[in-house]
Image (cartoon, rainbow over all chains, first blue to last red; front, side, top):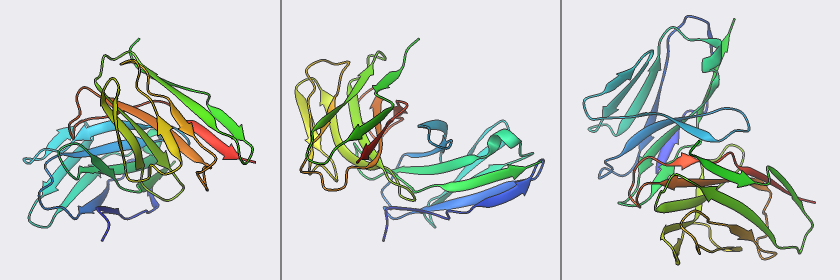
Length: 109
Length: 113
């Protein structure tokens, strides 16, 4: 089983729509969770950390479900500029992170 | 402006050649990392370093070498022993060697001719 698994998508949504997707992780001891955004042929950039209580940053909401070992990202009121690949990142030990292959979101006008 | 720089942006290598990818950071971060990204796959860890003159192998270190002579610099050499080196190489840093936020450079795209 992969350490981090994501639905590759693509999720094609119209502007203004809400899109949500999940990421599952295999290590029940994981404590650090992140969502990164990666534009085509660019480096990943931190979108948000994911906390146990869930957190929100503007139109983006992240949730953690420890019992089922998944994290989720929800994007409200999608903008064209939200088109990107979203990487799920989870720690596998005290020092190292594991990166999912990414979920591609395409927002159309 | 604080950040991580990588050079070159694009690199072409002939088979049998060694090439060195540069990574410099001015964030005063202790830890630095090298990842490789292939299409449709997650980032894979090549090497990481916690402090100067210390580095550890990651999951796919074969065919690669690194050095950490200065805190700011962590160059990666792709040797001729790496059988499939064509990939996008990303350097990252974090404040300490913990499973915490990593910040990435813009990457080097290496192509073997």
